[in-house]
Length: 417
Image 1 (cartoon, rainbow, N blue to C red):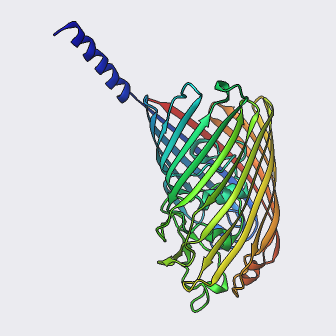
Image 2 (image 1 turned 60 degrees about the vertical axis):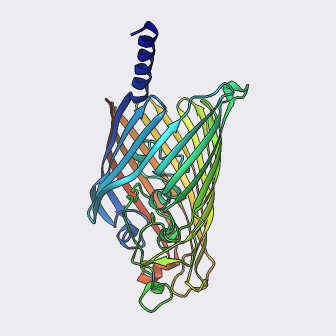
Image 3 (image 1 turned 180 degrees about the vertical axis):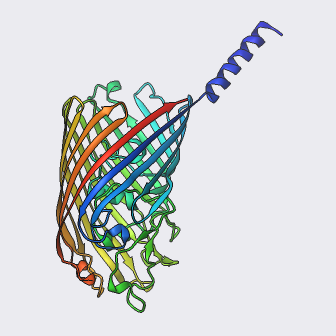
């Protein structure tokens, strides 16, 4: 064998090793809580309360989350995310995300692109930035992102193009993302029928959620074809939805982002009790890093959702909005976060026995202490003051103030093989 052949074989072997070299990482979170809830029957248990737990004291496994990532040196990685929970009323475990990701190196002009394909969260949440979509700064997500975790998940492909500022004499990195997706047609039904809620529980990929009771859903009434549970991650009408975002990011200073989501649902199509709602919304977010210990963040979402009878008359036609502002301060092993938010749903249809109107405000005060590497002890107080006429259907007050206090022990871990 010639010297050139030996060198060629060596280069080929090196290329194969580079392509096949893999890194396996496993991450997880365990979240144990004691909760004292002053409310009514929870929306998660088929009631009209806005917390995920009924009125009582509870000891729960609030989250058992895990991520497995298999990464190749070529820039390709495979991601699998699962979550589980156990409380007084129910327990479940299953997948929440699963996708293949590719991220290129920047070219000489500072452009790089990325693709995600599979089942994943669209780029919306600002606060669910820890392992398995947990939140670093608070125990419970805002009402805006509680809804995202419950009803917004897609099966599709997302392309992102980023222009890096350091290559172009700019202080900003600019990213544009476009996603085409299916399997999110019933999104909007839970928001209509239990309104905005507050918690940390994510809907599993094959999980159906209980609908709060209302007269129009009874046999023989206007919306009797709707099943008693909504399965948000279904494809009902064989139409493709889309989501787009643009982000401007300044390193160590913060970022702003804007996006638009439209599931492109045909709202008059129903299969096995599940409708294809037409749900669309604009969203915006901003993060300002005031200093190394302090950050200010905000999100806002405004949209509409429509469900029709098969003869195309409106059954549910709602406008909705929610937004929050949060301030986080860290010092030594301590982290304190305050968050205020407002929310509303405006019912625009004339369906009897299905009043989806609501409005209200919420406040959260959260404290966390880093006990040791991976271990965090925390306490959080939530209060929600809401006006929701649908509660009168079950003899509960239209105006209601609900409170929740939780103590938590959370453990985050990560291992690379």
